Image (cartoon, rainbow, N blue to C red; front, side):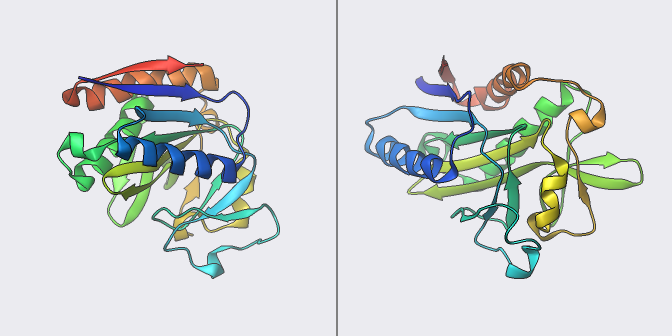
Length: 218
């Protein structure tokens, strides 16, 4: 049995600061000098470019700062009202199976949405978690992970109550024919502290098969 630390940042964390902290923590996990980590946070409004980002999908390059994320995927938005969970786990303790890890991340998002009676779905060829929103499909959560020497970092972002107009500066994840939505946009009034409780409970359900134990640092 091993321990996973849970950390919650109450104020938006600058993106470069978060990247540096993730890099340092991932290295320490590989060296066995730090526990694994799930870090819940927000960022100030910004865009991130994944390794597959196309410059033409950055529609308004001056709208917000743009950062090279170093993760998979294309352009995405981060900002207040969006719950980000950076997940730093040692995958060697979990069968060294990256595909299974990504599938578990998807299950985690879908399970937490289910607690709010929102049916999250995966679509072939489309990264993230989607919901049926009337006659169209909208994205409610992004998944972007990176694995280096079997330690994961980056993670998920779920739209709780962000300003959805902030997505106008990019083609989110390179997909223009679908929109974006949030829990509040779907009529689900929820605060981030309330949402964090569901995130943790759903995480434990999905990853319990590995026998994790954890603690929360406030």
